[in-house]
Image 1: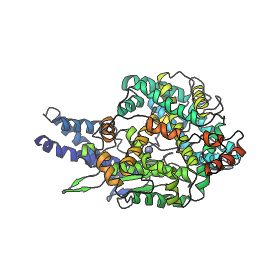
Image 2: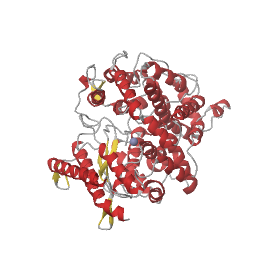
Image 3: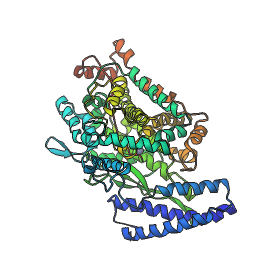
Image 4: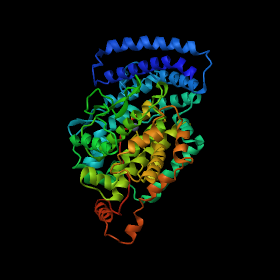
Length: 560
Ligand SMILES: [Zn+2]
């Protein structure tokens, strides 16, 4: 304890610095110009002063004899400090997209230039004489019934694909970038290695699990080939059936009501929302700290989180993403720990946990309660899991690109999507290049793809212990805080999950969910009594040979 007493002032200094860092990011996101009465210049000065002081204090502690936990606290602070930027808008770097084709720029600058392409080009795609952003185009692909119009929406991405991957020449911007990422990985490891460690499996096992999930989808989704511009539409019937009941202005009220039913009032805990599109804004939705929770005079002062998103439209796809972002809010506001550990858990856990509440939006009982309308279960599950497997496809894509960076990315994407998702080959198109993560943090997609395994495990375990929570459970937030979330960055994901589940993680829960989709029996028996069968028939009018599957969801979900 004496050790911790020595460390405590240093940790509170760290807490001040960490807050200044996240407040500067909040100001630079364009949401606010002042916070707690201080403007940007004042916060920057505060940040610099605290940073210099903390560096000195940590230096002084380097020779001290400390307990194991204190040593880990110092390591956590040092690691987290490395990621502090002291301002600058997230996902909107100072770099310019026009630098992406330059062969003389370093890996980091190239990566920044590619992220800039997502902002500059992805935020203003041309469609039907107007401008729309990337999220809206993905949404249009779910909802547009007219095939020609849908195809036109898909091809609105061409300028973005070209900015990212040129004409797929061996030294295209993306191909040079991924070579740089692979070189870096030799020194520092990859996101895939991190995810394997967090999952408690061998890195080689990651690929096997991803392929297992894709195989489950391949087997349970029929074998009708669809064009890539039809893929999201094909599985997005639930989105279309419910879209009219989710206008943009209803997104927040529905989201807030669901979380109130789960025992947390997001407004009351001070969450800040910035959901309107702006041209210079980050091209994807994300959630982050504004300030970090800490003890003040013997009482816990809660974490304040903020959610940023560029929403032009409503719809189930967008609502699912908003609920996902607020899953992140739940995660970080539930942390109760000493300052060193009031931080994100692993990316794998963070992304997986955010989907624990958001998957409910594709459950008919949830839809009935919050939308007063529901889509048939099979259609909802198909819409949800088509998005999951698309994330898994990107995970496998990045894993293989990082392992063999000279691979032709269009050929690889074509191979994965035609084999497992039954998508017609179009190796001439770089249609994989629609996720900011691919440029910002190569390998990050595995946190969604593999994260789905954890999501299914956590949802199943909560349901077994507490019952389903799709229509609320007022003790849900409190119970999860206590059993899973309060540790913050202190506990590694493998141990956390092992203790929570009482066994190692396995892909079984997710595989079972995907196998639930098999429409074969229903159709083969000619049993047309149920809604899902009826909708299968409707679908088959548009798509000869009955139903296929596929679609996708969140264009987004940033990390965090
Ligand atoms: Zn997320």
